[in-house]
Amino acid sequence: MGLKKGDFVELEITGMAFGGKAIAKVDGLAVFVDKAVPSDRVKARIIKKKKSFAEATAVEIIEPSPDRTAPPCEYSGYCGGCKWQFLNYDRQLYYKQQHVKEALEHIGLLQGVLVHPVIASESIFAYRNKMEFSCSDKKWVLPSEFVPGEKTAGFALGLHVPGTFDKVLDIKSCLLQPDTGNLILNDVKDFIKNSDIPVYGLRSHEGFWRFLMLRNSAAYGKWMVNIITSVQENKIVKPLSDMLMEKYPDVVSVINNITSSKAGVAIGEYENVLAGYSCITDKLGVFEFEISANSFFQTNTKGAQILYNKVKEFAQLSGKETVIDLYSGTGTIPIFLSEDASEISGIEICESSVSDAKKNCIINGISNCTFITGDIKNSFSKIDKKPDVIIIDPPRVGMHKDVVKQVVDISAERIVYVSCNPATLARDLLVLKDYYDVMEVQPVDMFPHTFHIESVARLEKKHI
Image (cartoon, rainbow, N blue to C red; front, side):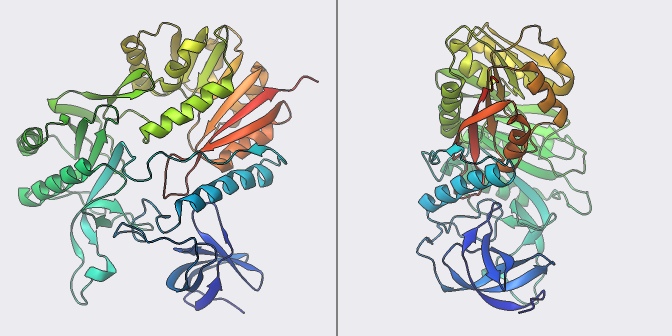
């Protein structure tokens, strides 16, 4: 049958693609279906038709899959935060393992690599230690709330709906953060509503209130509230800060980040501490880390400890090795490995992250970690001792091709590659496989109810 955009079609769901969409076939044509899971029979609407594939969204579940489960969140299916709440958690783990295997086979051209079953997250709700909520003057209305003829524009503080940049789903609670975060979210929302100060328009680029970022410490239960505004106006934000500090004993830091940038990123050009401390403290294993408003820290603290324990296991350190950590961030991996290595050097392009890494070393009494600020592809020359082990933990885009070449040239005996993107992991391993054997890969679930998966790969140098 010839599919066209706007058509309604009945589909049997047969698989799950990386990216969270289900797969069906119509006369041999792959159809990627949103809001469906394997073994569903659905009525779907075609939203895009290309020569080699089509995209659709399920509008009715005719016969549900046995893998379906009732999502506890009222925003499931509309919010872009977690797309798999309606998929049984055990099956989420299965498909994540399959995504890693398929990427290694199809992109990395690696056959027979041992990919272990995914290590599950200890918690599948309330696991995030950081949430970002956007302000908008265009509220996206749930179908259950829609009234024909009424204008949908209006104040929202919440999360973006997939496919829109200027409309925000106004939410009362997000199940991925602890309950205290939802109480703070609603108090901030009420304060902004009653302030009579306009929120920032994502099209007009005018207005004051921009984002709310909440951080919490899994170890100590303390909270940071970061209010991002377009200009600095203490007389507006200080009463909000005072109210939060008085109402919530566990709020120990209220920050105001200020940005004039039109980019939809919740990072300020500068910040101003309204109350309490400039950082909160969390722990990974026995180590403490100070986390500032804009610094990177793994968003699932308990999951990060599992991940880093696997990095330690794969690194096979005896206490004598020299280690290089690429993309070292705020120093979490070097500090976590410090007791088991002779010396560790981290390379990181972000100056504030390097500053945080050095500070975290002092806090933990670590003396065998050093950090180099700079672009990795230009910084290898600053390493004066050949490493025994290289740790690689790049962003989602993976390594720059020049960095891959330099990793090959350094020729360390072992590489531990930490990846949050199976596709770029496989792409980089495709280049490295001529020089290293990929011994095993361990996926670790840090993001329940999403298709995202972290993986740790152990590579051993080939001796030909």
